[in-house]
Image (cartoon, rainbow, N blue to C red):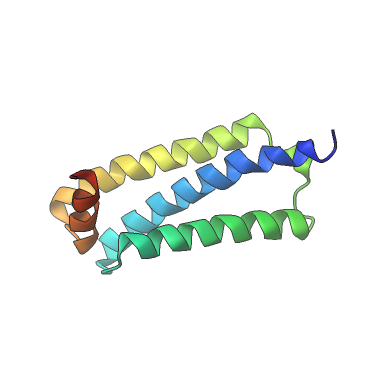
Length: 106
C-alpha cells in the first residue's frame, strides 16, 4: 500500500498545471506579452512538476500534507484565473486567442 500512497500527487500535478496556466494567461494579457498557447502550456506543466519535486524532494512537505482542502484551493485559483482571463479577453486580445479559436473549430 505504501507505493499507492504516492498516487495522491497526480491530482495535485493536474490542478497545479491548470492553475499555473491560468496565471500565465492572465499575466501575458496584463503585460501584453505575445506568447503561443503551446509555450504557456509547456511552462505551466514544467512549473507544476518542478514545484512538486522541490516540495517533496526538499522535505518541505510530506505526502501526508496532500489533503483535499489544498487541492480545493488550487482548483478555486484555477477557476478564478479562467474567469479573469475570459473577462480580459475582450479588452486585451492576444494572438493566442486566435490559436484557441482555431482549436475549438474543426
